[in-house]
View 1 (cartoon, rainbow, N blue to C red):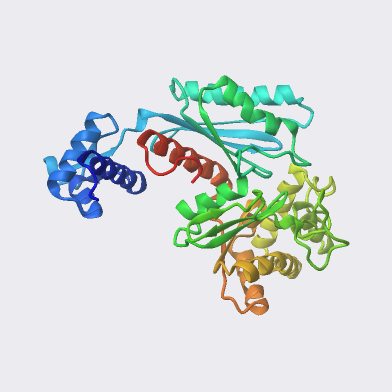
View 2 (view 1 turned 135 degrees about the vertical axis):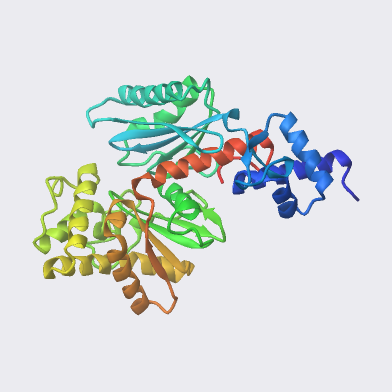
Length: 406
C-alpha cells in the first residue's frame, strides 16, 4: 500500500535532516543527488523545513557561484544548546555547544578527594550552569556525560561501583533537578570509541575495539558500526580478564588478580621501576589514584622519546607484552581487525607502543589485526559525550531515528 502524501513528506523530511546531520551543509542539488528525490520534491521539503525553523541558508557553494542553486542549507545551530561532561575522580570538564556541535564554552573544575559528596556535586552542577550562562544559552536541551563505571543498559543510570566517588552517582540526579535538560550517561571508554570512529584513529572502521589503558583498564566494542554494551552494560570490562602473570584471580568485587594487575597505571609504574625508569611521585601511592595514571603516562612518554636507549626499549617491550595479552584475548573472541590504544598510557605510547603490540599480536594470533594509537588526545571522552548529546537532541527535535544514545 503506497504511503499517503503526508507520510511521504515526513519520510522525505527525516531523510533530508539526517543527511544534514551527517554531511553538514548541502545545496538543494546535493540533497537531490543524495536522496534520489526529484527536484520539485527537494524544493518543497527545503521550503517546508525552512518555514519550520529547522534549516536555514548558511552560505554558498563555490566562490564563483551565486543564486538559488548555490545556496547551502544547514541545521539551525541555535535551535538548541548542548553540554558534554567528562567526569573523572579528580574533577569535571564541560563544553557547551550549539546544535551542530560548535563549541561555545570550555570549562573545568578540580574536585579534591577531601570534598564531601554534597560539595562535589554542587561544584560540578555550578560549573555547568556557569558555562551555559557564558554561552548565552537560556536552557540546555541535552547533556551528555562520560564517566568511569558501568551504565545500566535498561535505565541508563551509572551503577554503584566500588572505587568510584559517591558524587558521581548523585551528579546525574542533581543536574536533572537543577537544569530542565535531558541527561544521557555513557561509559567513558565507549564515548572515546565513538569519538575515534567519528574523527579519530578509527574513521575508516565499522568494526574495531578500543583498548583503554589508564588509571583502570577497559575496552569498547564496536561491531558493524554499533557500540555493543552487553546484557548488563559490562562488555569490555577486561580489567577482570584472567591472564597469566598475576598473583591470583580476579573476583566479583575486585580485579586485582586480573588483567588490571598487569596493565593498570600502578602496574605500569611498577614495571618502569624494574627497568630503572623513574615513574614519579605517584607511583607508590597505590592503584586507583589519578596520580598513578599521570605518572604512568609520563614514564611511558619519556620511554617513547628515548626508545633507542636499551633500558627504555626493554621497558616498552615488556609493556607491549602485557598489553598484547589482553588484546589477544579480545582478538580471539571478536576478530575486530583493528585495536585502538587509548587512555593516558595508550596515548603516551603512541605509534611506538602500537607497533610493538601489533608485532606481538601477529605472533600470537592467526587473525590479522592492525593496532593504532589514539589520535584525539585527552579530549576523546568530551567529544564522544558531545556527539552523544548532539545525536540525542537532533533525533528528538527532528523525529529522526529512535533517539537516545547512538
